[in-house]
Amino acid sequence: MTPTILAAGFCIVLTTIQVASVAIAAIRCRVRPLPLPAPDGAPPVTLVRPLRGVDNFGAETLGSTFALDYPHYEIIFCVADIDDPVADIVNRLIATHPGIGARLLIGEDRVNANPKLNNLVKGWDAALHDWIIIADSNVEMPRDYIQRLLSRWRAGTGVVCSTPIGARPENFWAELECAFLNTLQARWQYVGESLGLGFAQGKSMLFHRAVIARGGGIRALGAELAEDAAATKLVRAAGLDVRLVDNPFAQPLGRRTAREIWSRQVRWARLRRASFPMFFLPEILSGGAFPILAGAYAAAQLDFDVGGTVALLLIAWYGAEVLLARATAWHLSLRLLPALVLRDLLLPVLWIDAWLSDDFVWRGNPMNVHAKVDKESSETSLSSTS
Image (tube, rainbow, N blue to C red; front, side, top):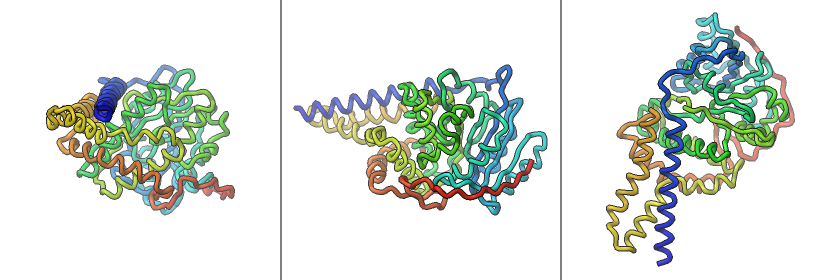
């Protein structure tokens, strides 16, 4: 009976954790009926958006930067290569919004092997204000974007972040990306924060310049290949917390390919494994495949209805995630349910793959999770449009 009891206990414990984690995320990410107004005495803020290439909905997500309901902010767009086609989009947006202070800076500083960090350093250095937000190009900013980030800052905070929420998928593979991003990764981000183990997420990060200055400055984020992992460690070393916005921001997806999804998930998994190995170890148990199999085994050994047991477990696991998506107004469709099941079947394979190699590709750049800091700095060539 010992294997049967262990299997039943394993299934019950992980299913209970699944439902509890859904409840935590549902409370934190519930839909807010009204946008947040700018606070009294709203501090000036600099938005730094590092860019490379043109994303799906690129003109829309970049354009959202100019439509924020905030009294005093500047925008700094950063591009490493003057021939990058995204520069034309940015220049058009700047020209059509002359009332918003915006600049495009071109060039890069060699901080480490992370092209994103190398690209954004010049924007940080050029920022006029002490409150600085670093936001990826594919983040769709609601009108109260800045105040939602600021509202989570309190004493003891080192950085406020938003995990990406997949939106507007146009094919099944984009639905699969929603299954990874929304009711799995975002959910566990909020569980971690509720346990005092917040992790920075690079899609949207709000800093106060003084926090980063005390940790060695923006170039200190080159201590890790992933700048958000470095930010997490820098903030924790200072005895400060990583906090998440109460309702995270959307990333419109459009169409995706299976290869794109797998490549992105492998990249993130290898970076998590390299930066936080002890937290990565239990990720193999984050999906429903193993507990549902364990429940089926226990039911068979105990002469219970195996089919009925599996059906109940499927409802408990995936019904909870569907309810989470509904409660938070995240993407929900008939295709999402098979995407959730496929995601959980892929999770053990993804976990194993993350241990098999240190290499990955980011936007055409071959990279390695153990890449060393490039000690040879190159001059940054800047051009400015305002």
